[in-house]
Length: 518
Image (cartoon, rainbow, N blue to C red; front, side):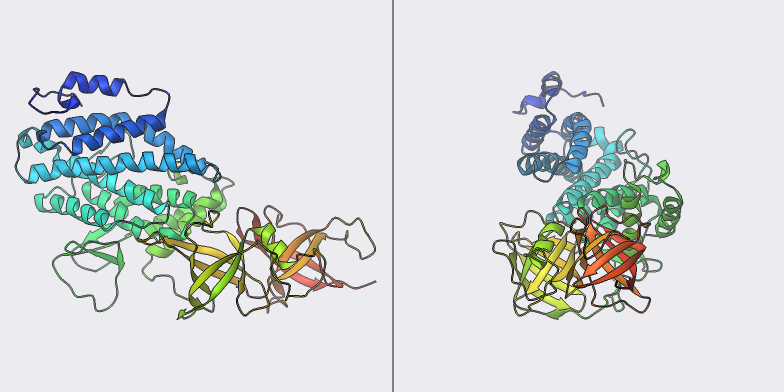
């Protein structure tokens, strides 16, 4: 966009068009983090300068927005691929990326308010108002995304601003009009689609996804936005938002009182589209280009994310399998496959003594908030537990229990006091340490047998003769029959299926049969 304003009496370096271009041209060329930090500072100073006419403000913000775009894409990719140990750099990237989206959102919203107040410069940007609103919504959606990547909390301010921007478009009658918020970026959109992208992202229970799958979920939600539905009546919708009391998506339930400020929305035909994409992925050896959510993602991550979206956008929400009860007490928690093995069997022998005490320094103490047959809700230390992420394998031991259980972290949330809360699915409350090896290689007299540790999840097979076993990551291949030694007995494990794979573990099912001794 060409800058074409007359220099006014605005006390800001960017009030002069030539100087504004010089500042942008002088941004660091080879340090994208520093570039975004400086762009964020310039946007902040513009947002704090009330004297800009509306057309001036919009054109300067647009200039800085364009300068930030490529760096935002690159650093977002860097952030998603960054090793978790690089905490300082991770924080710097997050702050730089979120900071620019926050300042862009504030800037475009300030433009909207100036327009609504009828201040100087509105005539020159009247045709651009739908674009300004769409960009404000896009910036707010990315703020939501980056908050969710750290599992919240999401500011009430953000929900209020999303609704404020969308309501302007409804009032002025351009919510459905076709817009390309950015050239070549995600194609044609509309104010309605931008608003629904944010609301449907909040409706998909993103706190139950690890960061990479959250990224896929956000991109997929944006791609499917044209299929979503929003209406003034609940027919065909699953969620609602109150424009008079903004907040995240709320699942529709019987007895919701109808009122003019409610907007009902849902996935529309997007759930059917997701089912088709899942079918394509299951048939293909790799992810087809048209199913790749706008990035290079693995087939398993795409399938898992698409299933998650379809489940939470469906007409019926996922049912809770058991009642949740208020709980009290503490859990000792150890993270990851290796530490769980160590906690289960510190002596590293074949004993089945489940009362083994926890090795010193291995575990953390978490506060139990609620309990169900299927798991726990817990509050975790505020300054520890940097390893925590959705999908992490954990060992669990209650205060009064001699046994170690096994669980998976399924949900992470952070409240306004920065206290983290997790939901843990319990796979077993009595885990059994075992040894496994390739079939026919295990014998009680072979001192050099190649065995490795694993975790048996049941004291006996189920009705189909199957047992769940936790193996080290990448061990299950669906072909090899394994031998399992439990105490003084050997069993044959025929592979059935991989239930779930994590960063350092495979949770698999096997058909079990006791091997004849001799």
